[in-house]
Image (cartoon, rainbow, N blue to C red; front, top):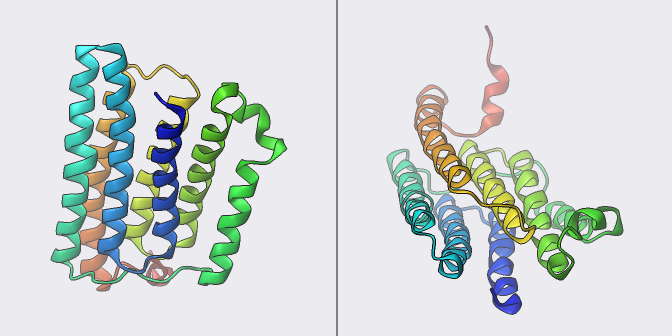
Length: 215
């Protein structure tokens, strides 16, 4: 895979994570996740073209169907069902969130994490970028107050881990990819039940409303 093309795709993935922090619309957040998943699909599809493994093609096709098509469609349907036009706010305001994003990105490129990003020396910059996307995805889970945004943060974390694994030269076995697809299916089921029950009980998906829960 050409290094410049890989860097271009990985940059798109990183920017979608940043966008997830800045957007206040649930619909836009789902579109960003769909683009992010498409990037992962392209990485794995190019890998299939290089290896020619038919079984890998089946796995890549399933990832296209589940991650790129079904998951975004599911979340859009959920947004429409519960009339969720906008996502809730963050714990940190926008300027502080941007500062946190910058600091986490700098951390991913720092010398302290160099032993991790130098696993494959030619891919060090790519690994640092994937690691920064991972940090920002984890921060998204912590910083957002909306349950839907937190779920997207978890799925974004999974995408970032897969991207890091690809450029770290870790073996992407079909069993591992099937496990990832199974994980997405489980999250869709959990999201359906959790989000529906939360909205039905509280009339909102703002997780701060759960502070008043009692036994």
